[in-house]
Amino acid sequence: MFHHVKSLQFNARVSRPDPRFANLLLEQFGGENGELAAAMQYFTQAFGAKQPHPDKYDMLMDIATEEFSHLEIVGATITMLLKGVNGELKDAAEQSEIMVAMNGKAEKESVIHAALSANPQFPIITGGGPTPRNSQGIPWCASYINSNGDLTVDLRTNLASESRAKLVYEHLMKFTDDPYIHETLSFLMTREVTHYKMFEAALNSIQPNFPPGVLAADPRYLQNVYNLSDGTVRGPWNEGEIKGMGKEFVYVENPLQQVQETDGQTQLSEDFTKELNDKDKLDKQMSELKSAEVKNAEPKGVAQWNEYPGTNQLQ
Image (cartoon, rainbow, N blue to C red; front, top):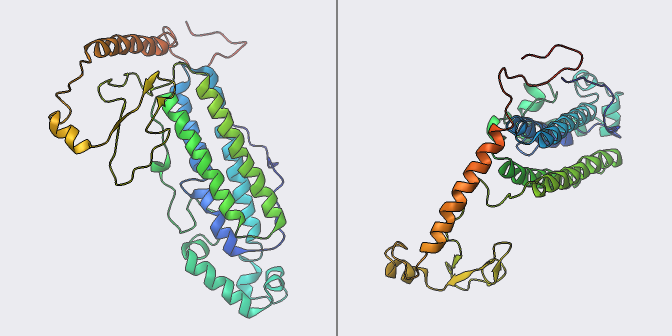
């Protein structure tokens, strides 16, 4: 159950109208890395986490709700940046606040031209109001959402989502010198860092969490890294220990020769019988563990999402 409180989480302010930056800020309203996308992603992921990981369900719903509040902050800021645009500007009132800020008709026409060039739909179709579109007028799309039904996969996706959102806020800061907007963007950017660390902690609290999914990696192909370009640089990503797996990377200097000599890696010289048997056992153990994790958490009899104190419960 949602309850809307009209006070913003952060006191968003702007110094002066700026329709050009308002259009740019739409990227965080209806863009693929914006607040609506984040809110819907975490909201969607939470449903699959409810039974096996009720604590992570709580976290995902809390962060999703905060992202909705950030969407409100962004929308409010866009609206304030358009102060005068939808009223006085349409009357061409030279004494209006936006006209004073823009020093007359020539500057007004320049601003209108810039807004139209960047995104004609923003001032024309929507009247300048924030809608779920990005800065180019492209409507928000559900394909922005990643929800895979495996919480460890979803949490890794969320780490990347928070990283991209932070980067967008950093870029947006370069396009405005309004100190109040900088304060708002700094707040929103910092919350992305906080959410990143929350998702990271949640991922680390799920053990085992690697590799993602249920099935273990095939030992015949796990350790190989290939020299696929001239002058391949060596580093901890292709030499030494595979972190946390107790194995070493095997650098294949000539991948083409290896493929030809092993019939496309189907006739390997090394015997992996023991490793494959161990993998089969691990696959069975993990399958039983993951299956039981969900089944044991599912309620018996009539299913209901919540229990409400002070009422008769369904039997």
